[in-house]
Image 1 (cartoon, rainbow, N blue to C red):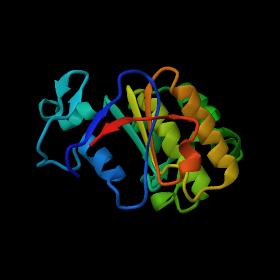
Image 2 (image 1 turned 90 degrees about the horizontal axis):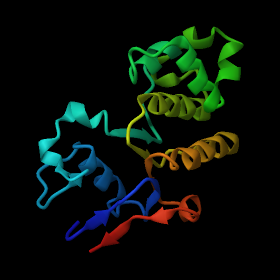
Image 3 (image 1 turned 45 degrees about the vertical axis):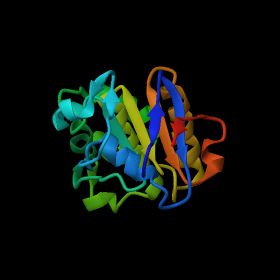
Image 4 (image 1 turned 45 degrees about the horizontal axis):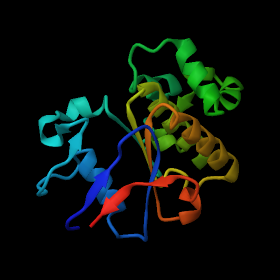
Length: 192
């Protein structure tokens, strides 16, 4: 990629769309410092990205991708990774918001054991758990990188509703190769 300029001035829904391999995920990896060695500048809130520590990025960005990692352990364990001092009530509230609580309360609630990579959950349930964890972290920027690909329609609808609500208070960036997913949202201002 050369001569890319993206500006996201305020809270709202923004989208980055394009065919596979065009650089969508590369932009996200640059923002989250997974890739370095670039030329030019990336600024967040007026501060150069190179001056922001990796640990501080966890307070700025929450990333939910199509393959967000779910850890072996309880639902509570997975969620406390985002906010270690969250109360059980906070955990349950956010699980209700992502429509996962009804399923979990029929099992062991927040103490429900999750297998490695969430293999005992459906794809939609894994995504909703990853979303719950992200919501709990309460960052200023949420990035959804193909977050609704390969999940059921019910989960996709629930996630899209939460994304729309979240964008009223936060910056939400949706990355997708499916233009139908981003049609109603503002594209990022990209100049090359």
